[in-house]
Image 1: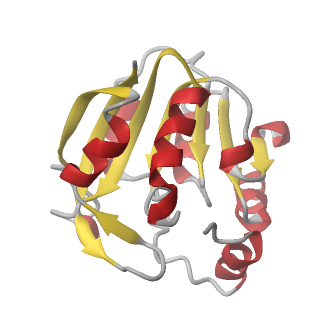
Image 2 (image 1 turned 135 degrees about the vertical axis):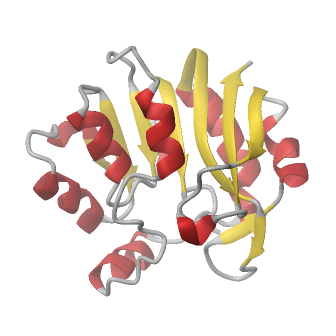
Length: 193
């Protein structure tokens, strides 16, 4: 089961985007602020309005890519971020992407896909990352919904998906989550095996 392009496009058209913080996520901002290599090739899958891509781009990380099924989300980035290369805004299915990245940022994409796709997600992340590539971001540590996104989960479940493909370098309760996500997020930094 994969939620369709029209499902996500409708969310943007009707402004039912409760996951959208309207700003860069504080834990990701903290992580970005300690990065020194501005040449990193970075992917933000299911990026939506991607304030993370905007923050990175405006701070000199010009090799940032966003892939999303919703055209409106990508148009929003293009309209909001002067100079963001249109070729780095990819309308398409993450599972069909065929490029290599140094860093992939997880921000509410994992919880948006059906749980049946989580093992496939972990494998695809491994394939998209180059040698010593990193998957960094936030995973919900909460039950959430069973029949529609966001789908929740917990650390024990997630280990099963990621451990075969990654060294789980950081996998801990997030201390600086956005206020309405306090005590509900795990910060992760996984390094490709």
